[in-house]
Length: 340
Image 1: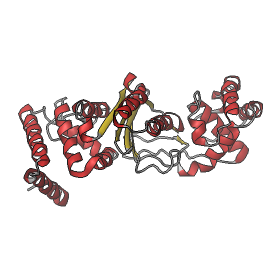
Image 2 (image 1 turned 60 degrees about the horizontal axis):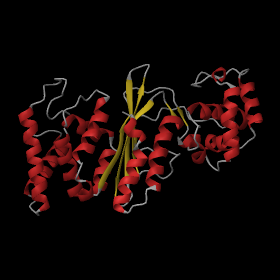
Image 3 (image 1 turned 90 degrees about the vertical axis):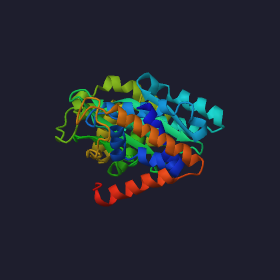
Image 4 (image 1 turned 60 degrees about the vertical axis):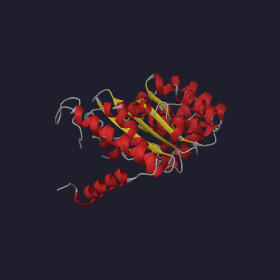
């Protein structure tokens, strides 16, 4: 998998630059197909971690040549993302601060501002020498056992807290408190304003919420909020005086529960109703490792790696016959859906 992933990515970079790679990584359809080409189960949550891991390992030693760098991963590796970014930036002379900020903000948005019931456990961060980047991260819903993948790319982000995703991919949709929806703009403003208020006032409103009958569309009950425990974090937000919702989101200790409480208060006090619409939207080449739809054919798999490796080597020397042949195949599939 690492060998094939490396050849595919290098060919894309040679043909279309790192931007072409980022564009594909932000497309959930392409990413899923890429995972299937590598031989992973199309319906498994592991396709995300495996495909990103194969890219990272496959590119090891080629990063400076291609100008494409990878950080993060699953579990502890995701928590070391800032450290990895800084390390690569020291070798390239690139400023790490904007990249670290992009990594942390994208992770915080999907773990706290988009409250869809999925806990983020995988965060892969890719960037180039120009400071462009792409993020692929995944969350797991423990109750259903299902996963959800979040795609980001720097070219698609105009505002980190207003419709920032390139795509969110999942087989199931449900009621979601989406504080980065365009429709939640007034809520974001109100939440930031409440966070600058004295904790006593906000806590009093939370107490009052307990006596209200909330509509069914709310994904949290006022009874789930403990004013006493909320007071400590409200003191921090009051002292920080965050100027905007994004600044508030990035404060240490501000998580999903704090934002839910402030969003409920914002709706009652300011009439600023947030969006509860789920933002998620919904090919095998070598078989699948689970034998579905057929076992991985190692000979064909190795042949594909050899073909792509040869195409990459020759493309570097200016010999593009094989690359043009691949383009003709792509045109044939694109025009008719299959080759006859």
